[in-house]
Amino acid sequence: MKLISNLFIPLLVLVVILYGAKKKINVYDSFVDGAKEGLPMVLNMFPPLLAMIFGINIFTNSGLINEVFTFLKPLFLLIHVPLEILPIAVMRPLSGSFGLALLNDMFTTYGADNYLSIMASIIQGSSDTTLYIITLYFGTIGIKKIKYALWAGLLADLATVILSLIIVPLFF
Amino acid sequence: MINKLWIFFIVVGSLYLIFNGKADVLNSQILSSGKTTLDLIIQIFPLLAIWLGIMNIAKQSGLLEKASNFISPFLSKIFPEIPKGHESLGLISSNIIANLFGLGNAATPFGLKAMESLQKLNKEKETASRSMITFLVINTCGVTLVPTTIISLRMMHDSTDPTSIVVPCIIVSFVSLIIGLIIDRLFARRYK
Image (cartoon, rainbow over all chains, first blue to last red; front, side, top):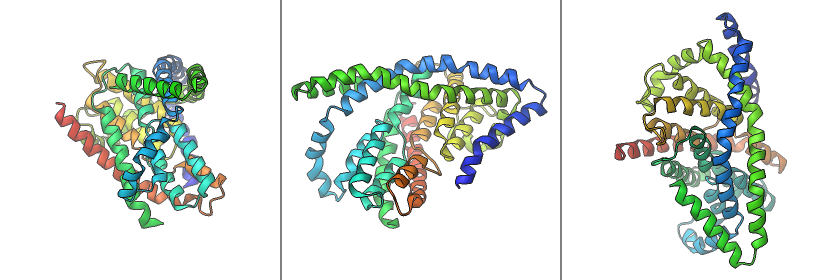
């Protein structure tokens, strides 16, 4: 698996360049023209990302989240969801780096092979940062009305958490 | 939607910090977010430029179109609005494949190009099209065969079997992808 993963990029690059050479296009010029698009793209990317990181950082570092978790604790104990995975389940869609930091905390506290750590790993590994992806992709191409995109993304994230709660006990 | 969420994040976070006497934390958050964003952009930019270069070769040589013909029967079920053989299908499949192999950095440029290409098909330029949202849902489900970051984090913390999470991860992300696509389809019908 690791070998396939390591060979994927070099092989892809090689295939693309050889195919271009076979079709007799100027691959060098073509590469330069393509790379040129990078700068306007990051320039379009910067403002929406800045706005989102600005808002998310204030919110995630305010400490309010901890209060919310303390408040929700009895409810989660009632439906037999381990409370320890709650922070990662809630924060994962909002911030990738925050999720990873939480995972690192859990590994340090409980050890990497702990049941809760494994469950948190699987939640983190089977989803992506919904809010970041929406901001990055839609922001870069100038979409302002996102319609139901956020709801669809967040519901899929909720599905990931519920599935993890069901599937992890079957494996560990 | 994003507008309301943004106001909520900032107002609620700020007020909470101020009432807890942590105005200094708020100050540093406000001042540092520009640098955090710039660091992120600087990380993305070089790889983005390289992949845009490679992708342009694939596009001009016709390889992208060929690849899209190969997988379009499958993708056209998920994206009924994209015309057959359109370049966005090739870009979408490249993004999905790069994500599958855990190459998030390589997947992003494909994803951005795919979105640009979907924007060309979009009639209202400021409103997300149905195909765009479907593509977004596929990406937010984080379908991957090798969750590399987590495996390396587990190795760092001396896990006895760092890759034991791989199979459950694949199952969870694939099933959640299917659920995500169903949810997306239900929303799309309601919004018609």
